[in-house]
Length: 171
Image (cartoon, rainbow, N blue to C red; front, top):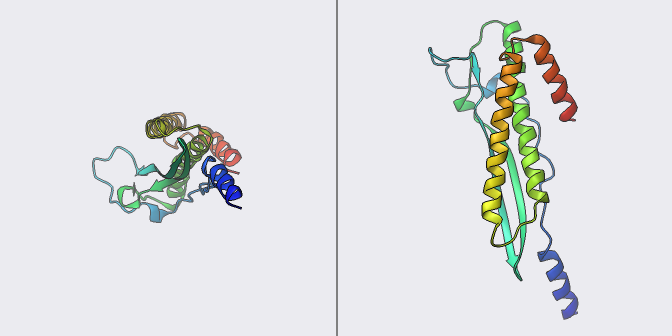
């Protein structure tokens, strides 16, 4: 019995733990925009966000087991929206939804990458920080590309093309 317990303990402590399954889609509403827009603001809306991660670990016999949590965080107190009329507000909110979708998709990618990366007790901190930095850099590049291609939501054809991408990816 003692040998079975030691065997099971060894097996389970050498496996990386992966408790989090999926990061939920963030559905934006006007409640996500609580900051008053500055008079000199460049854009009619700004969504403030971040990708946050946490992990727990256990090191036994020079093996590391990690359990990750990744979240796509939206900060309403730092986000603003210039209301004009219901039709334009709907178009602008849809465009901002695209920014939230890019955030969530990159947070999901980071979670998958963390879950599928081999770590050692000597490299896990540096590797995790590097993977997070890469995910954030990619998020910023995609956000800029999204705004450039859609002209911040004003190019309706390009916006619709992105909307279809978001639908296909977020299923």
